[in-house]
Image 1 (cartoon, helix red, strand yellow):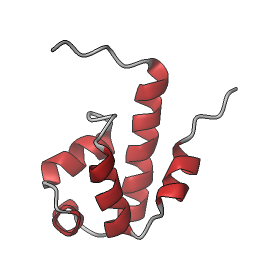
Image 2 (image 1 turned 60 degrees about the vertical axis):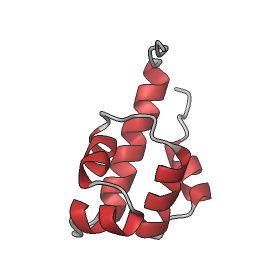
Image 3 (image 1 turned 45 degrees about the vertical axis):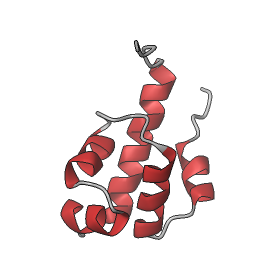
Image 4 (image 1 turned 90 degrees about the vertical axis):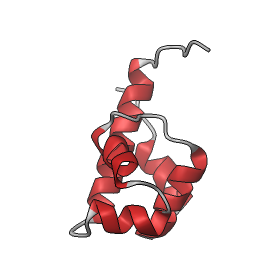
Length: 83
């Protein structure tokens, strides 16, 4: 199966999600947050750095729960604002 390349907007949204998650993680380690979310630290690292700009819904939901964020907040804060 061949994946369709991501648009610049999709990449930017993924980078915004990564920044938001990193900010919410604060001083906690990637390993700690990843364990609470039930994902690998490497997966969290890829999401935070934008190397995995379109993580699965349930991965995002687990991270939101582990970080005390609401899904609504994530949607609003990751929405791209037209310039």
